Length: 433
View 1 (cartoon, rainbow, N blue to C red):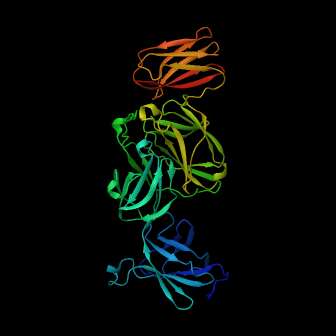
View 2: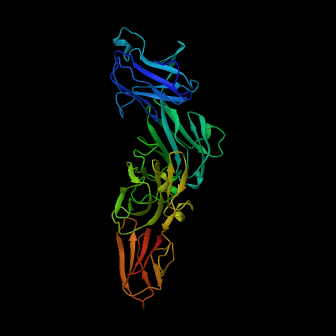
View 3: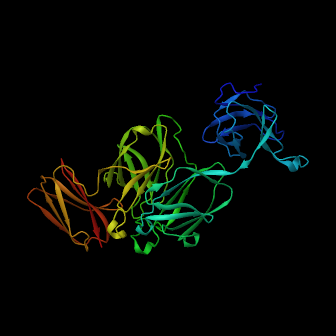
């Protein structure tokens, strides 16, 4: 045994499994490391050297299993010291003559015995992705206490500890609120002990004043709550991503990196599982879910410096800001675990011309009849009008002598006007009232 730590900057621990009715367990310092692996009753580990700090110790039957119990271990004042940490008492006192309940204790070298207090906590990151201009800045209350003051659109918190196993009332109020009584929407959630979550504020406060979702999904203001999040990548050389479809007026989409489909048929409010990709730079193409030949927009994803990290990528804003009270335009928002949030740079926007051909679509918005004027085009050029579901509703071949066409009887909605030739591709957005 040791009366002091080998290194004066560490705390040296041995762990004793002394709970007679408890199974073989692991002890995990949450978000740090597994301290004890497969310890059964009567086992005593070798010494573990850890920096002096405050740890949350989770006791589980095995790595990845549900947490049996969690404890707050304050080792911050024990630099240079040693301790024996022992599991004591019964998991089920009622089956053991009502003996003392299970707990974790530390015996210091001077004979002092300290009980680690039991805790129940989860990790939570909050992301503001609600593009309604009326919710550009909000206050967030949890069980009546102000948690976030003037929380801005397209910003996020880092992961923070929040109570688990109890009902949380999350209230969202205007950024000018003075108390919890000013909340506009309230959501009730209960988080699991040791769970890792994101809560994404999304949607619009009054859907009747905004464009409806083309797939019929509700666009009302809500919280997307997702568990089994990660604060770091599983593999040190990768970046682990989850994608959230948070653009309320956008249809079901795919997201492609080259020929690889990263996201397949994601509708509004869908959240994908994790995608692990090597750290690097990627071009992400957004296409309608059933037509990968039509690229709605392309974005640069500079992930080279993010090896070992995790991120959430959110479709954010409106495809048609004009029909949505001139709210923020569509883009991809990346949020890291530390709360850093940034928009991915646009490579090819919806309104951007490629090469030399230029296109004028007028009037836009239209009442069903639209004129399409093309300049600097070559022979064997095709004009396609594509609806938001990816279906081609009009396709016409034109040549250099034909500078414009007129299209009539278009149903109300949003469209893409795509000009295709051997050398040129141009995409314009069209709105029909």
